[in-house]
Length: 316
Image 1 (tube, one colour):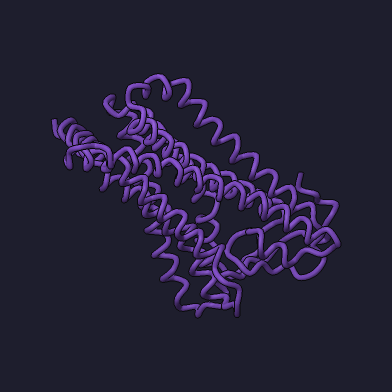
Image 2 (cartoon, one colour; image 1 turned 45 degrees about the vertical axis):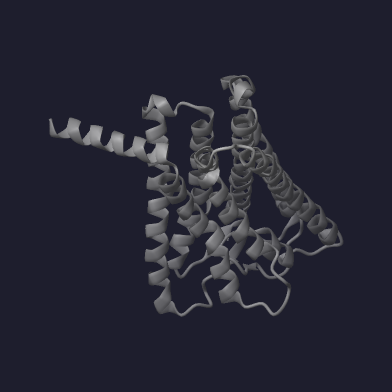
């Protein structure tokens, strides 16, 4: 898979934060560490609450639990290495480790997008076809949707990683990023097949992400049309409130992604590109559990109930 015979490079140098003043790096380390710990604790709290509260054993919260797992694994593939590099003077990463990081980050990142799409479909069924909800979103059907998201995410991660690491890297080994990412690695590759590989990888990623986004938009188009047909304002508000947290996370997820990957080409500034990349790898996972916890009244009440029960049991 990794094509070790195709390259003369045995390791890469991650120089994403090397252009920043040294006195800023400990500040970045502390900030990103706190955000990372909060992301882990927030997602673990969501998972524990869903697991312990039988009232939350529904498809919507099953998907939310799967989303929290993918988010934990995604950040685990990127942030610990980034934090180590912020305090280290040796920023090299082995060829195999670089390939593994890319594979895991793409796998969990695309799984995250697919799960958001599945959650949009769940809300569409709940609002547009409430009488058929238990049939369409049966336990077996939900398990298939989650398993399919993980399988498709893994397939994309393997395809992208295999394509990139079968290229030849015969020049500089300095990656202008804080993780092993496709665009900076393509700049280091050489050979006649680099343009075709870049085009193929780009098409796979754009098709997957754009397909997920369009399916979410389609789901919400039907949802909005159904909500507008509800006669009472209270009924419309109640229906929309069940979608609010998911919709906000989708906007944040794809909003930061579009800023990073679809920005106009122009003069490149390493510091700006690095900070923009942290919004997608650090800030977006940090915001997700906050949004779901604060905007979902049922989950928020279940968290309070679980916390009070644990506190009462510990005092007695």
